[in-house]
Image 1 (cartoon, rainbow, N blue to C red):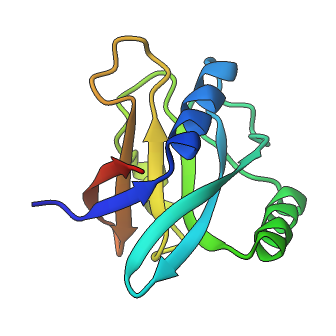
Image 2 (image 1 turned 30 degrees about the vertical axis):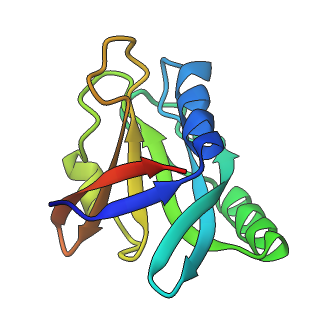
Length: 139
């Protein structure tokens, strides 16, 4: 049975909306929340511009990353996840995603803006190049 990650329905809707907003390029951003005795709950979404404006890669500019981290501190939450979309492929971590998974405690969410996607949003832990899928629970 896969490990579960919990998000508010508003955060899930926000990820989907960001992926649909510019379906030709990868969207990206950070997710904040709380960890109360091992119960992780993602409650905030922090959209960011894809500095690469690419359909196959994303990068959050350092100034946006710092701005989002400051806003998380102000909101009283911590970094819990990172999201992006795969406009042209399966929403499973690519070799680039795996190589650039610098935050081993974060959950990586990958959205598919395709209307026929079997699972529009999937969640993964990527640690030491090992990918583990999480079940997503909306609360």
